Every structure is written in structure tokens, then in C-alpha cells.
Image (cartoon, rainbow over all chains, first blue to last red; front, side, top):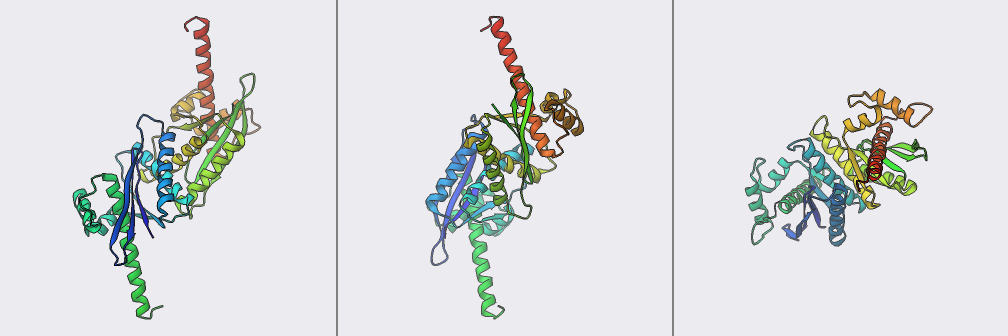
Length: 172
Length: 172
């Protein structure tokens, strides 16, 4: 059950496909960034993002989409632009009936580093350690996409453990 | 050449299809609002908006999309939500290769009422007068969609007059 993590943006949308190895270890199957051309009009750039994400979804068949639930931006204009990219990413997921899970930036940092105030560097280093990568993911938006996917998988593992514990204790 | 005006929103997206009669008079061919269910997740609501707009586009075959270039919102969260709906509307236009034209709220009020600080009531009354409607368009978002479409058609008429004047004066 591969998970698609996305870090949406009008200029660059990062994505990462993570899967769980039998021992519970996480594997980065694929990551990348979809870039749009600044001088192109918004509709054309949004179509490019949409097509790029649809292609990743069709090739990797993720069973869930994890995305940051961001409520901060420099200004209204940047929030609106982020929203446009985000809307198109959510639509791509809905086209394939993939459930979407949202996590706050703090939850993502907590899940990856164990500390909600972690720096970008700390997050990047923990990602490469958790995914046993030969080096850090220097592509910033792909790394952020991997981080939110890790957060989702950790939450899912955590939930599964709670469920298992409940069953053992005969609670259900 | 029908024009599609859109007032995007996650909850309600208004639309209006305007056409120009031979004498230059504007005709409202169709208007409406696409509503989404608040308790549904964003992806489902965005797909509903997208499908609704695609249907209007396929049935009315507009040659241009006019939309407000809004840079104001209550807060970041509402800007992000507006952006999501806007992104999906722009994507629907791009699916049919319809060029998108953006106008500021002030430009829209200027075009409809002749005064950038016009109230909503004044805009609604001028819309029904310009389009010779039996009553005002009470559906607020459909009225806003009609307003931005009027703005586009007035701009286009104005541009055409300038071009014609240039040709007459032998400028080109």
C-alpha cells in the first residue's frame, strides 16, 4: 500500500511515494518535483500540475494521499496561489478515489523528528535516516512531501498498534 | 461568442453565461450556482464544482472565462479555500482551452455601475438593467459571476472600438 505525500505549490509541487517493508521499515519508492513555468498563465500551470500528479498516481497506484494542512502564508496572494495548487492536487486524488489525510506542520515535524519545533535541516536529516537514503533529499519540496507521507504512515502504524492492543485486552 | 463569468467559492460557485446581441446589447443566456455539501471532504466538494463547471462549459461552449482577481479575504484559511475552488475553476477552463481573463473587483464595479465603490445592491440593480431582466438576480454568486462577465464584454467592446478607431486613423 504505497502512500503519496504531496507538498503543493504553484511554482513547485513536491511528491513522494512511500511504502512499508514487511518489518515496518519505510521505503522511498519514488520522489520528485513538478515545476511550472512562471510566465505561463495560471490555468496552464495548474493543468501541468494536475497532469503530473495524475501520472504519478496512475503509475504508482497509492492507496492514500497525505498533505499538509497549512494555515500560514506570507500574504493573501500567496495563500490564494497555494490554495489553487492544493485544490488541483486534491482533485487529482478524487479522480482516483484516493482518500486524503491532512496533517498540521507541527504533527509532521513531531512524526519525523519527534519535536514540533524542528528545523528544516533536522527534518531533512531524519527523513534520510528513516528511509535509509544514501544522502539527504536536497529537493526541498520532495523532502516535505516525504515528511508528510512519513507522518501518515507513522500515524497509521500507531493506530494499528492501538487497535491491536485493544483487541488483545478484549476491549472489542 | 458566449462568455462564462465565474464567482468561485468552496461552498457556492456562481456562474453566468452572457452573449452579445447584434446591436451590442448583452443577453443573459443562463446563470446558476453550484453548491457543495459542507460536511463532505474538500476533494469530493472540489470534484463536484469541477464536474458542474465542465458541464456548463460543454453545454454552452463559451469562448472566454471571466473571473475576479480577488486579493482580499477574511483570513488565510478562507483565502486558501477560495484558492482551491478557483484552481479547480481555472483547470476546468484549461481542459477546454478557454482563455481566462481576470478583473479586479474595482474594475468590475466600474464596468457595471461606472463607480468603483458601488454597493452590492447598486451592482445587482445595474446588472438587471443592463441584461434587461424582469427582476434582480437574487442569487448573489450568480450575480457576481454575471458582473465579471459584463466587465469582460465591456472591455472587449471598448478594445474593439479602440482598434476600429486606430484603423480609421490609419495607425495600423
